[in-house]
Structures are given as C-alpha cells and as structure tokens.
Image 1 (cartoon, rainbow, N blue to C red):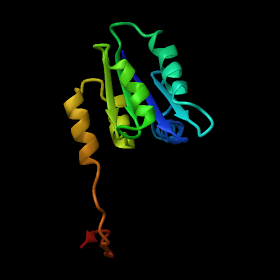
Image 2: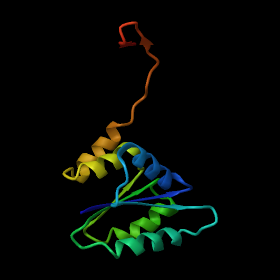
Image 3: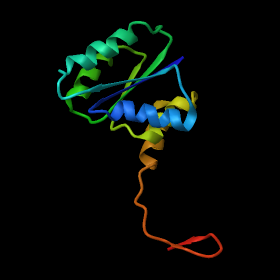
Image 4: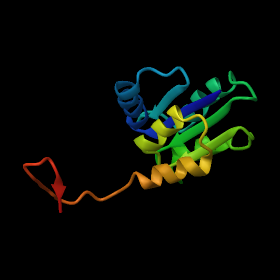
Length: 134
C-alpha cells in the first residue's frame, strides 16, 4: 500500500491534511508532522520513525517535506536508505493529492504533475457568455 507522510516547519503539514480531507475525505494512509518553534528537529525523525517502523517492506512510502535543505528535510533524509521510501521536497497540494489518489503513478509522473501545477494567473476579463478572455 502507498503510505504518505507530510513533514514541515510550522503548521503546514497539518494544514495540508486538513485541506486534503476537506476535498477528498479522510485517508488512513496519510500522516502529518509539523515542527513547532519549541521543538527540535529530532521530533520529526522520532515521529516519522514511529510510524515507518509499523509499515511493511511492501509498502511504498512517500515523505513530502516543505523545503530542501531545511532541518525537517534533513531529518527525513535519514529514511531514504530504505528502498521503499521516496523523499520529495517542496511539497504542494496538487502533488500530494495526486500521490494520494493515483496509486499507479510513478515518482517521475508525480514530480511532473507537481511542477505543472505551478502557474502565474494573469488578470482576465469575464464576458457575459461566461468565457474568460485575456
């Protein structure tokens, strides 16, 4: 089974879970851990380890972190020694939802979907015919 773990500074990870549940309901294979200003980075490692140890070797584990090179990401890097763990930094809502809902996509497809979700929205004119025009 695909297991998804979100890790972040502040409340980002829990906020993403909250938003995902609002869009697509509760998911038993989705966990989130956020490091507050009062916690040390080891909080992330020990929290993730406590659930990773419960997963099977057959589980595919995706860990999404907020920013590459940050302390949270550095703690999550300790799990990439396992063949069934994928660590993706720079998480955004579209890539996490895609990973959660599309079991058949591989890592390259997920990364492309996450990158493709980024776009600049220009001001457009809304016509009487419900058509957006530039």
